[in-house]
Length: 608
Image (tube, rainbow, N blue to C red; front, side):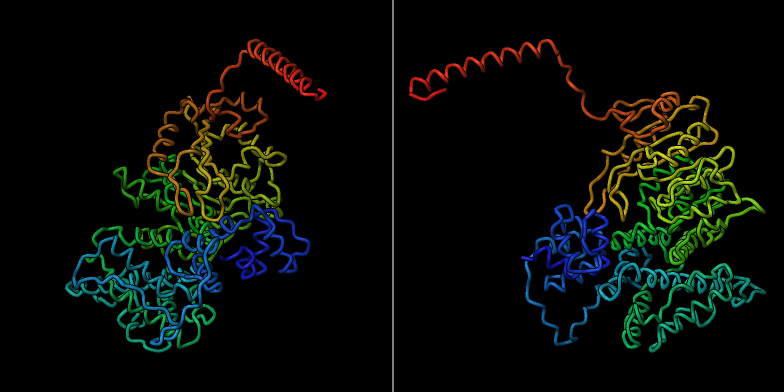
């Protein structure tokens, strides 16, 4: 049986420190790995069942192999269970045919000329990950797969356009002006298929050539180094792995004519992002918000055709794309929106740009940079303003930019400057400052912003006094990758309807969800109930309550949901006089019983 200490001894010092911080484990000397292991072993809260689910599947497999456990299985829960209570086995013997090399993954075969369905495309794309899985961390290999998918799509679409132009008089199919994206010869898939050595270098040159002739792609592929020795190994290994990936993608035709649905590639890309987030565990929260949470916020904001919409912490772009999907579901043109965003992480920014392009939203403007320290979406000397601002900022971000906020040239922080260790309300104030006079904000926040005092209390008070807060929706725990803490959706409105002025709707949706293996999830019926309740703006027993600002003021502007909404069962009324009478009767009977017992003891010769 594998012991907790055995597993912990195979963790790095940094991993052990992260566990100690997460579970408030006191360690005498954090510089000593031995002391860290001893402290975590002694902790009752930091069990393996609690600690391990935050690790990526690749890391869990590494630990299984190090402890001579079976590392098979696609589900992280299986690996966690194996490590948390598995039995050790002998190290597997290497195959004689290929040493310890992993077998090639099963691939999805497609018949020539067959229309590609979304299900088959998704399975084929995910099986591409099997070629890299086990070699590098999923937080790294997603970039290679996204990059190759993008190269293949651009090349196939270019070839399709060339074929269509061949029958058009007075046109040159090789004229860059005739194409949405011109693909130079060295970047065409037919050329990449011919490469047998230095495949990584060929892919890098293809990416550079694409960016050089297509200014709108600048930086999108530059962050992916297909020749990275640290991640892909030596030249021989790089050629083998990348060669397999190229041939894997060669089995697919990504021309429009070969896809069974118009937006299929974009949907498949979203599927990949979600799968990578699940695979990456804690790191997944850095670039992905669960799909139904995104849908909930968009449904609450009700974007309309012609609007300007912004996500200041865009991640992989899911919230902006869902706004386009919302229009499509309501019979409007999904492209009749002006989409804007900013993302700090350059790798995630590139994923977002590719996501927009694969969804047919090339005009979306996604800027690189820190939204608080250096907002890039400017209009002359001021900030651009939008009809809808939507975001899932990082929870309680430390070192978020307080120093810069104190002298902010755009005067975004007029309600106050949040503490240095919690940037939540800095992002909220930025969103308010970039919303026009009739605009709305939808944002995910940790529950702490509802009740924390000091500077955050003053900021919350200012927002409430200006009657900006329209609704607070408490969500279930463990919805988000990287954190199990409960969160809430805040809906802010700069132009409330008359019947909603000086009122806030508080909704407790924390108990309605579908349980999952690693993450809980909102179901469609959960989202529909929240949205219906918000639109009705009425009390619902033990679920929703409309609160006046006068009542909130009496509670010192505390928005803690439990303060306004009784969600527990009805407490039985107690008749105090009857209860006291019953108590006296029981006491009298006890005294009588004690007297009888003492009499019996005395008869037996014992002193009472």
